[in-house]
Image 1 (cartoon, rainbow, N blue to C red):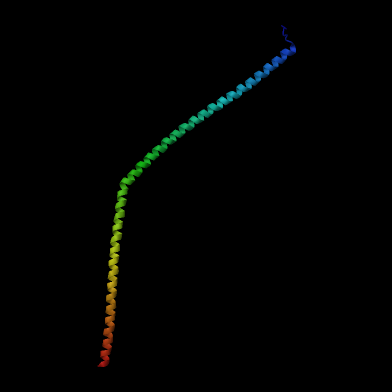
Image 2: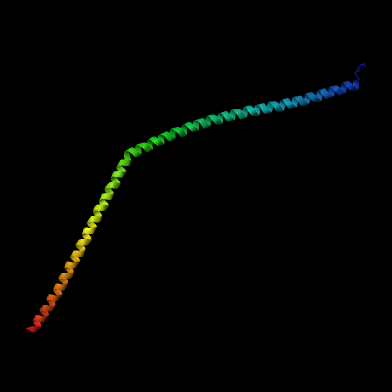
Length: 135
């Protein structure tokens, strides 16, 4: 077996290689530490976002329940009243339609009477003129 001898050039080369490896390792450890911090920051941001989303979901649920309750109250309180008002208006419209038909019938009858009276007045006027001429 041949003995390996350490020469000054060989020792310096090994030292420089070791130093270069140590610098690379330190740089990689620093990069890894930065990546770990970024991952921790991201995890914390996601946890905050998750908590905010949960709070928002709870608020939306509360508003939805309140809205549903309000709508139920309005339906219960106003629904029948609105339907009663609509029915009342329908009855008034029907009554007004009947009254309008009666009024139209009265106008037609009055028009016939007026026409009869005018015709009768004309006939009597002509008769009076004829009688005054005959006398």
